[in-house]
Amino acid sequence: GYHKVLEENRKLYNQVQDLKGNIRVYCRVRPFLGGQPSHYSSVSNVEEGNISILTPSKYGKEGKKIFNFNRAFGPSATQAEVFSDMQPLIRSVLDGYNVCIFAYGQTGSGKTHTMSGPDELTDETIGVNYRALGDLFLLSEQRKDTICYDINVQMLEIYNEQVRDLLTTDEIRNSSHNGINVPDANLVPVSSTSDVINLMNLGHKNRAVGSTAMNDRSSRSHSCLTVHVQGRYLTSGSTIRGSMHLVDLAGSERADKSEATGDRLKEAQHINKSLSALGDVIASLASKNAHVPYRNSKLTQLLQDSLGGQAKTLMFVHISPEPEALGETLSTLKFAERVSTIELGAARVNKDASSTSNSDVKELKEQIASLKGA
Ligand code: ADP
Ligand code: MG
Picture 1 (cartoon, protein in one colour):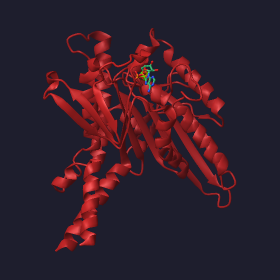
Picture 2 (cartoon, helix red, strand yellow):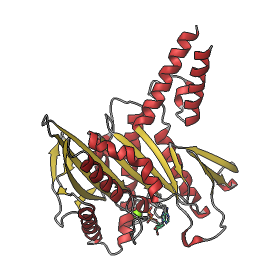
Picture 3 (cartoon, rainbow, N blue to C red):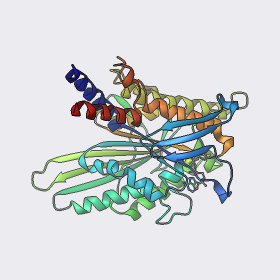
Picture 4 (tube, rainbow, N blue to C red):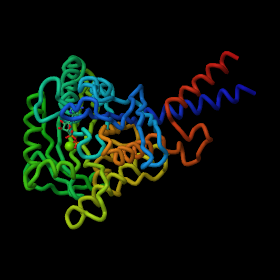
């Protein structure tokens, strides 16, 4: 009878919600640089969670491809708008959650702009990293009569599968933690936005050391700002811990195999390896596999505690509007799609559950509503 169908639909709906709750995917389209006025854009429309891409015949079927995300930001979205959508996730760190936010995309697509901001920082242009810490300070101040928080930060760089502490000049040793090698990097207490700005500047300076072209290097390494929070309830004395990784990933562009040689090729291989390891981990979490391949890269080892389990993950995909970037844009969007709509459960529950787009959720909602009314 329809009670069984109703029950089945409810189960499916919850599954979809559950998945959406753990792995969110946002997408942001960078504006044209230098304000070219009515330049042809490969992004034809950004609406609700949808991004429409115009594809000339060179890339397969001519026409429009629509990609669906939890959120989509067009070229005119402000830093404040972007941050406000992430705010509840960030705030949950103070409630003891582990949060992981990645900026993914090809070099020049706006990852650093979102996470840190442009070179010239103002109140309007500062990025997620500064805003997130500012917000944690604000909220911890508001809670100070109930709970006392300690906030500490780490800044790391992963380059060619080597982890480097950006808050010191020394190379860091690997130490054992939960049976996995993760870096034992400097953990620095912070209590104000100016502390954070000073540390970011130090990290930025250290990142440039030993590299001829800083921008080059930053696009071929991952940088990770980690925030550790410990709260102590004033009355009971009990404590909670939360952590947040804010990751500006290496550029996702594929190296041209015929051109890349030597160091460039090695770098490209390391980047490909770690980005696909990240995709594999997220995909295996989404499909609730028993084995999650964290050990396949330094990046996934480092983030292990903040991926899966009760952790909240946000993959923030960046694309460029330039027609010349269309090939990379499509592969970025396909990667994101793989992460967000990966088969729901290795068991492949049934056809409806194999996709998790908003329209599916809407459809299930409507079905449930109509069955209730029946
Ligand atoms: P990535 O880190 O992905 O290589 P960047 O963040 O450095 O890319 O962005 C490339 C250029 O585009 C920079 O000059 C940056 O300031 C600019 N840019 C990126 N996103 C935006 C945006 N949303 N609004 C204005 N300028 C942007
Ligand atoms: Mg960058």
